[in-house]
Length: 248
Ligand code: SF4
Ligand code: SF4
Image (cartoon, rainbow, N blue to C red; front, side, top):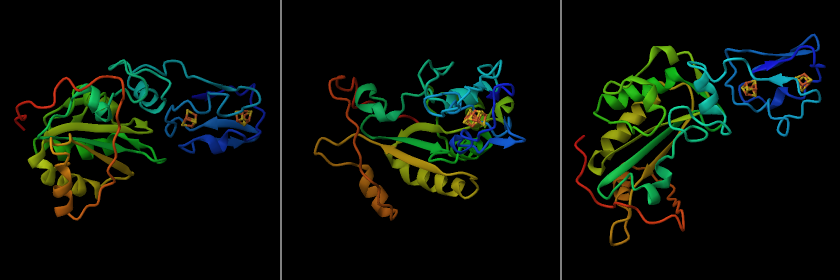
């Protein structure tokens, strides 16, 4: 993002709205640290940041690679160029009751780095993807972060994106439920070297008797999850609940 120096009157209204603390006012003119800017678009939306002169404007080439990924992953009003899905560009496993991505006997895992509030970088993502790839995780193809991996088997991110920063993105995959303990241990270990925050979603189907198979596994590990349900009423039932377990 850029500030039109002719329009800016140096009022400072915009400064506290930037999640990356990238805006500063010097000599009564605002400017943006381009390295820190996540291209989230907050300052550009006048109904969010009431800049009296509407001085913010989009940098030419803002949607082009590699910098374009900042915009797609950080601004929910954009549509991701790879998946054609708005925002971070993934339908996520949260919509499992419609998509049926995760079947009985499987666990869906979503590790969201950068939220709440801190933001993150592709370097941090690679710490998580390489650790998970090393135990045989197969990343979700319909997730835009997966598309940035130059080596999916090793979890290596394409070097051209390495310097990019973003509000958040999600490492997403599914695996047989028996692998949950190993997966959790790997995430815990990788988290020690992360320079950001993350949230972890585990998704599974109810068994026919109404139990959640993930709970005993987590209890054994001393983890107390907050059980949540997202049901898209009226959008239909899963097209599949049971399939042959994946070979992972
Ligand atoms: S686009 Fe977002 S990160 Fe960049 S300066 Fe504006 S508010 Fe800050
Ligand atoms: S709100 Fe607008 S006019 Fe005020 S400092 Fe920021 S860019 Fe300049």
